[in-house]
Image (cartoon, rainbow, N blue to C red; front, side, top):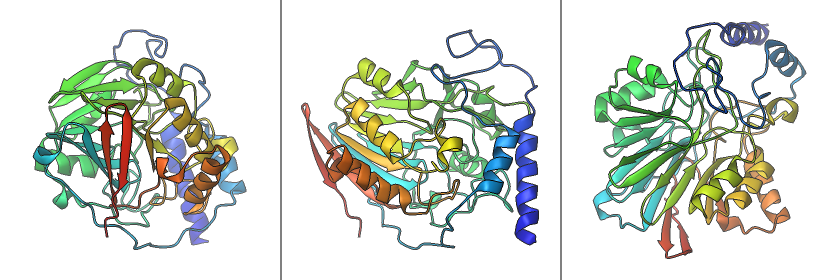
Length: 360
């Protein structure tokens, strides 16, 4: 009875967040993905689901139960960025879509999430089953924070407030999201549209398209853009794809930037497919994205910490192995790190030498 009550309560809360489509419009230039009021996807504008789709999913769900907690984190290998060479990068998987990316002279965080729940509330919503791979107190000085969109599992207010207090980093966000970061206390925010670029410490950051949607509060449905990011130095190109469904976007990115050194791609939160397919990739979609990008190395994320869909906790990893074999791709070209695990990559003039750093 208690579970039923909280299910109904959670669905009601979701309805309040998702049903309201009015609200103040931000002023941005009309484009092929903005009509003057609402943002939309280029290829598939049927991405976000309605209230009755959520009801159908919740009451026809065959969700596989996750364990209460898993203690298998690795010890991160955090580096002094002054000692990193220009053709090297260290990527530490923190959890979900949160990564510490360390390049020469710069530390970058993606979609930082250190809270116990992926939710606007501390008492309800998906609860973590693995600890964050790095605590905020253990982070090196953070220069840049990339926020892909405004869903609560990617734009986490408590985490961002702590980062502002501790490091006062520069935030780079797709247009429409600056207001949220300002409300959390930062004045160092760069807001960009798809394909726009900013330069920070000899690094170019390009906001790139992703097939997804946005919502934070009533009235905010698709009023802010969603995106991935290209992180480009003189010798290394990294894609952080954000949260997305599979689309031709990856081919477009490859066409504009050439071969990608490292692609950080989601593989989880994909079941049931009738509900999740257009907004979340499954492992086969992720392998297709890896191929489209001609990626030297892909790193999986968005799995194993918060149960946001029906598949089992280890299903994304198991299915990725099956799909890599199906597409004749070596396992060491698409890695599934544990929380806290650090991966090392070195670019050798058009060739790639990849070393997997076992943190234990």
